[in-house]
Length: 353
Ligand SMILES: Nc1nc2c(ncn2[C@@H]2O[C@H](COP(=O)(O)OP(=O)(O)OP(=O)(O)O)[C@@H](O)[C@H]2O)c(=O)[nH]1
Ligand SMILES: [Zn+2]
Image (tube, rainbow, N blue to C red; front, top):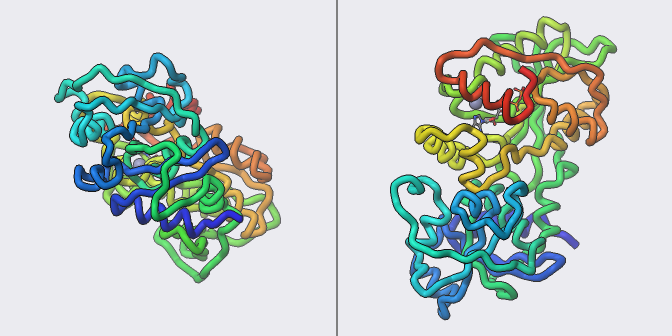
């Protein structure tokens, strides 16, 4: 039996710097997160000073440790052997790319085989879900006070658990005739929102999937196009007669606000949005749009016109059983701060701009 609540407790533990153990199909790993750990916790976790370090393949490739691994699979786990000189500060430098250009790393480091691939990949995924750097000290076969399974994490992330929690009229400046519907699962703190605009007319609704962007949506950041896209989506849906804006709590393409700001700091150093994610150890886009399909299904909509430039959104909705009868482009004018970002999306992530 999988237990989504156990995964929620593990997320809480990792954020507090407590060890967890994850059991997968190919073995168990005890894990101490590097971001929230410290030397005292490390000594308690690993008195023999033998625990190797778990990183993603993308981070390992950035550190030039990845000649034995496949850098094309950023979620694949890599183990770095624990040499006697590899202390907590050195591990932090392996985990956190903010110092890459300033601090020459000690070395040499050796990547060693990881038998428990399944558990290792789940550990990296759990770090992302927790909004933390994907890097741990690891004891293969080890235990911790809190033990979970890979299936518990899958259950935590399963969109089938979403239900409608509340709905009310919400006139907004771009659409006076609107209703807000809030969705949640028992464990996830972020509630997804649907804004139903206009009146159903028997036609498939015009739908926009908007991923949360605090900096763009609230602060008016010019680094991206999210804020103008949000306003323009509401206007386009209102003008079409009826449709739905889904506001998805997928900040930073699924890596969370803190990690997105880390990616922004790397962009300040000259890396583009794709390379910044890889240097941090994440996939380029970690979002799972099955959550949007579940929300549309709960709203009784199986056929939509989709407002997007991102073919992945179309493909993922279709794979989750929603019929996308039309893709409607959603392009806004650029500004000097987001020109490169939008060019990168066109050239490297397949956006149709
Ligand atoms: N990791 C990361 N996330 C970013 C960055 N810039 C914006 N985001 C996030 O990207 C998400 C918006 O996705 P976009 O790629 O702009 O657009 P899209 O939703 O894929 O595609 P469209 O439907 O065509 O707009 C939001 O969650 C933002 O927080 C960045 O540089 N790094
Ligand atoms: Zn944005």
